[in-house]
Image 1 (cartoon, one colour):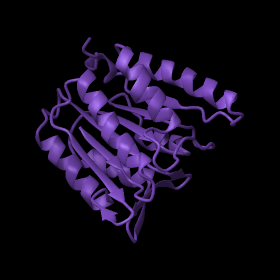
Image 2 (image 1 turned 180 degrees about the horizontal axis):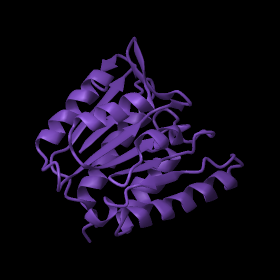
Image 3 (image 1 turned 90 degrees about the vertical axis):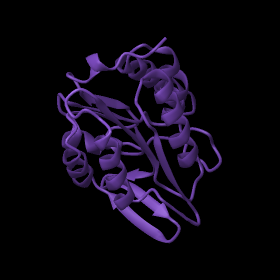
Image 4 (image 1 turned 180 degrees about the vertical axis):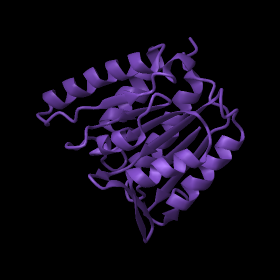
Length: 210
């Protein structure tokens, strides 16, 4: 499993990348965990590092039977995900991530993206073999990315609450989506509309441990 906190100016992304990886590893037998994150001074969660981490993870998997699990958390825009590591700034675009995942050679993948406008990745990534879960659709922000927070709203609902209880990723997503919507309405935010797409061939392979 690979989990990256991409935006270094706010510690919530480091916290979420680390916490999400721990929860997923506890629920599913995902093998070795690689967590990388950035800070205001720099960091190792860059596009180059993500490419290498995905390939390293893929090299430890059976490309036909195992599932490659990727978690990305950051600020997002209609162009993609923001990367900030000290003075380094990059944008991870949907097409770039699609190409990176394709080069791994692993058939089955799960990609969870916690960021504003993260639904923009779905048309590029989602297939029957690739399950994509996003914190928002392609037209709305998501919420909760304050510095020093432990989770974003979606990260808290999906990883910290729903995934600890639900048996399947689908059940966890549906529960998390309802939690996020209730919180956003309570706090008078326009709904972010978390999405799940693709993965028809992946979901049967992922049943959480009790």
